[in-house]
Image (cartoon, rainbow, N blue to C red; front, top):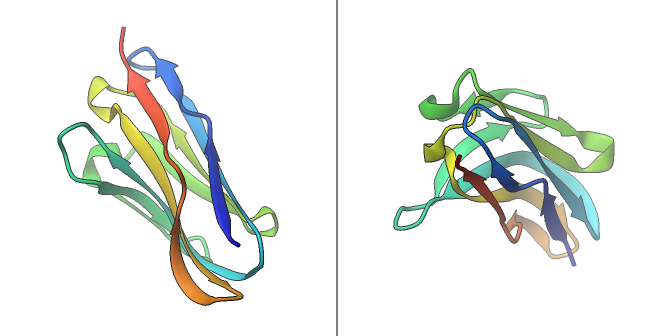
Length: 119
């Protein structure tokens, strides 16, 4: 079974930085786009950043210039470097990946990691 495991969340002061990691494991044939989403209390889940197999990236406007998404294809891992964090970045962050495995091609989600930006 394919799993996505996230790490790197926590509590940070405004202006600080965090780096999230998400590693895919299991019977994986191919990984296509990988991305990070977030969901704040009382709000819908939103796309934060996405990266294609070839390295093309896209960001939601509120994080452009502050966040950077990258991936290590041999390690089946995607990262989100978050700089100059703001209280409004507080949310549960979810990793997502489009993966072809034994059961075909599916969108997979991690369990989520809490990011809290507060003084």
